[in-house]
Image 1 (cartoon, rainbow, N blue to C red):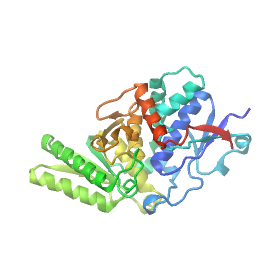
Image 2 (image 1 turned 30 degrees about the horizontal axis):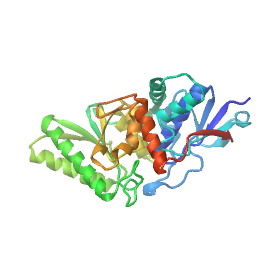
Image 3 (image 1 turned 120 degrees about the horizontal axis):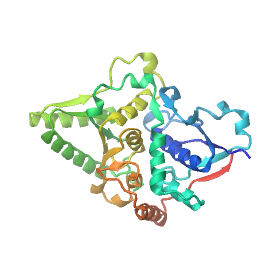
Image 4 (image 1 turned 90 degrees about the vertical axis):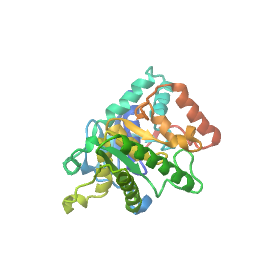
Length: 330
């Protein structure tokens, strides 16, 4: 019997790596050989970018990752199975994988599965084209992840998106928190990441103004400008560099209700995240809470299984959960 599982992760970089980690953990416990096809059937995604990511910018350890199916050995493909994730943002989270394995008769704990997510995350590292240009001193920074274009909608998915008014309110809360941090800490450092440069600059101007008004010094750590063109031109280079830069920060502030990108950055790094979704309506339904077994969110981590089960059941009750993972013929 062929025990090869093919995964074709979808969406942007954060979702793709979440898919990869979830499938890797599942296959680890089921003794399947996972082969991930990272860039097949890619398309133009949000904010006019392509969701093809140059794999030469990564170092994958104990993970088999390919650009396209045709790169996989024919014998491995014969009778191979495929890993499906109908609800990209829910059914691949640590509790969902744990619940799936438990229902299939495996006697493992939720904490053990969560720790396996962390273990596989540490197997994803930047290669030298990325690591050589991660700014010096970034480990002393607070990373700030801003997200504008695809997370703000008039009729949002309450699990991870916001209305324009909610976005304004959340950003105001982030600014207030950063103002308090600037007041307390001397020579505080920030690394700001965003897919929207204008949005990023407005935020930078705001915190510079706060520092000037308080006569305080802040350090804004930025990507080096001397990156050679032959490296910088690699597809989605800046996005991948931003993710690994955030992963090196001592903590990440999410300037958004939820983003897989900064969740993964946190998981690749020191697993510390600041999220302010508690100020928004339907906070209890925010996806971020499903990652609280692998990431310290607002200095808290927990393994209370009922908390996670109740949240997923609420999704099912209101019709925003589209199904558990399953395995099918390729």
